[in-house]
Length: 187
Image (cartoon, rainbow, N blue to C red; front, side, top):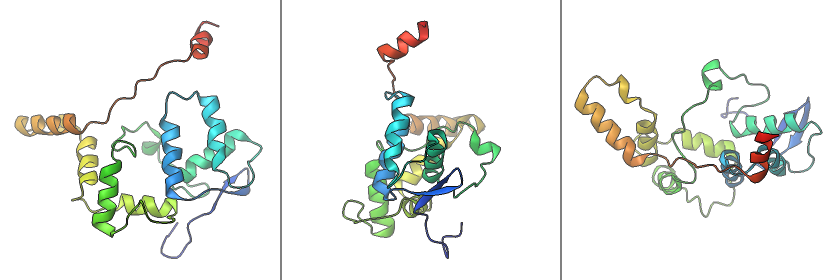
């Protein structure tokens, strides 16, 4: 998709049919937080995710959820993922933990107050987020979190990078199994 002449999508395609979805960035931040919430069982999570359909929910629930996932990742229609992108990628930012940095970066770089903007399409938000200047705090955090210190030859620099990574590390989410899930293990 070329955002210079194509409009951001207002719907997703599931089983060859278009379904309108909620598009405001705030809702998609909530969506991503729900997806990452390991305390919510997957079956319940799938039903909750369907709330992002604006009018009608596709009959094929699996296709419906995958279509929302594509929208979240800003993939239009059947854009293919590369093999590299399909693998599990280490998280380098969190909308929850980095909220202040993200807010400040939008104010600094674009003079956009994310608290008072009436509406911003999710894909617009993601494009602005992805292209924030490298000198913003959030981009620096992303850079350091994504580094592999083992690739740094200089011992002192490797130590410095590890110290920075430790200071800005995302909290590991501790997941507790529900009674039902524990029962399922023994069933």
